[in-house]
Image (cartoon, rainbow, N blue to C red; front, side):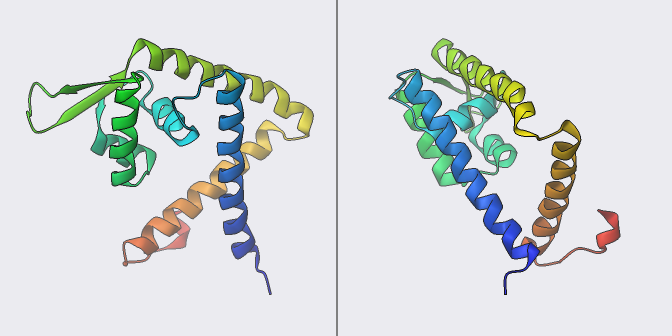
Length: 157
């Protein structure tokens, strides 16, 4: 028997894969071959900020080793600039290069295009907001379960 909970988990996973496919199509459409879809989303999450790989891991919820590898590849392909922190020589900060900024802008353009198109898919702003509320509740629930302490109260959500 499939429960709504399990169906939601499967759907989130499937949606994530579809979204990465959409990003890949956008990269292909623009003939960008030296970066993959996951790296493009990491780059997008860096945005106009300058941050350490650790901060990127925390903000983007990526696995640390994967972020380190992907950051290395993006530095090699000149999407990111890597600099040693002035205050902590052990820490390395990354920011977008001009090439990275161009890709960031291209992804922003894709998101803007999608926001206009989504209205014709019979998906309202209100239903998207409701989905976000539900997903944030799931995020807090799973974070509580992952900490092995559970949640004190579901009413806090």
